[in-house]
Length: 333
Image (cartoon, rainbow, N blue to C red):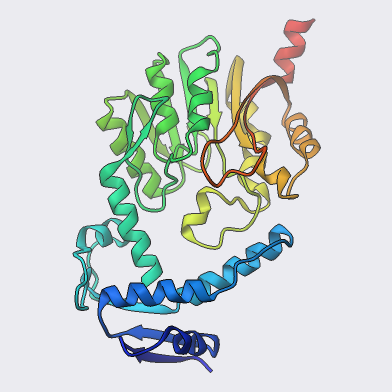
């Protein structure tokens, strides 16, 4: 039976974990820094998965998140009413919107909100851009930037227009504009990403238009770039949505319709990691069949090795260069 139990500095991590496993939600009424220590102690008591399939590990991670999210702290109008609590008003406003009275928030989530605020202020230096990108809460941060290197280095097709589909922070739109493409349109269906991209592009003084839509803006482009979520599985949290794409829905929708938005002779740049293949979630042959089903033909590919610490051994990020099969057959004949 679910219960809400108030605990404080006198509660041990072992007792807290027993309460959570019995189905209780814990409301913290003690020192904020001690709450952080308790959360860390809970994390150390949860087993780390070793082996098993991707889905086994995903189920384990989901349970881990459930346990750790059972420790809640009180926030009243974006202020944490606990001893030694930091000022989180701006961070909460960025994540939750205007103050709305009292709420109980998982401490784990709140720490993520604080971290996102600090990253937004600090920004992420992207070598391919030669500048910093400032991500917003729940918008994918370009801390893994090998995909940006690929877009910065790949030879541009002829033309003056480009679409950046699923722009996120606006990074790829900025790179395309700085490479000399005169008309760049960036799209996303996440209002947070739209606000983030507009802010970044304005700060960078990049002449690009940002449009909120599911995939494509009106019109056609000479170059269409897309860096979709790489893992075809269901997202467990809001933050997962930039990485997880259930059943590859966005990828399939993009490939099935992109040809309709391409100028004659135009080119599609699809940026994908082979992580899904390494996890056993998709085969390379399936990806190639999706290209053919969308009326697309591979005309080139550039690869990069991820440098971040979470990359798997041998993992590769690729920029696939695609053209309409109708155009390729025309110039071939």
